[in-house]
Amino acid sequence: MWKLMKEDVEAVFEQDPAARSYLEVILTYSGLHAIWGHRIAHVFYKRKLYFIARVISQLTRFLTGVEIHPAAKIGRRFFIDHGMGVVIGETCEIGDNVTVFQGVTLGGTGKEKGKRHPTIQDNALIATGAKVLGSITIGENSKIGAGSVVLKDVPPNSTVVGIPGHVVIQDGVRVNKDFNHHTLPDPMEDRCEKLQSQINELQEELDKYRKKGAEEDVHKNL
Image: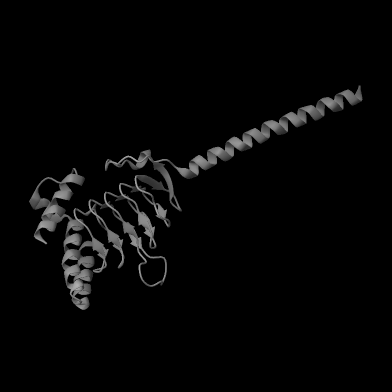
């Protein structure tokens, strides 16, 4: 437990350039407090002390604004940036070196039983406000863009954006954590550009037919 907590602190320094000292991180980072509260609650949950686990979970939620079900399985060096509004469901499984931003939901899609929450594999990054729903898998080294809604499996080494989420980058190379929201492709903009291009082509064809028809009318009049 102590080793995991130490690694959680080190993960903050790795991921957040605003972190200045161990004292500051330990006392003021709500995301870190949420992770620690969950690790304690998870220990009680595994021992079938469900009520105590839920009490700890809800107390942590009240103090940090982050709700993590005590049954969720979270790996090493998990980092929650800012944290407010993050929700992690009961059957969610999170690997090592995963980063999530504020407003992220790792939730279910209904009242189904069994595994109903996402599996997030190692080194994944889920940006602000993204919703990952259902029993799906987010592959290793993948990134989910801000505000995206992901309902299907995401292959490793991929970047996903949009509603619903679409894979826009998949190159088989490990994705770094230097995530720049403003440089992500926009699938809606790409689609609109394609539609506009098709409209322009149709307009050109229509102009040709009109011109041809006008010339035929002139010849008939002559």
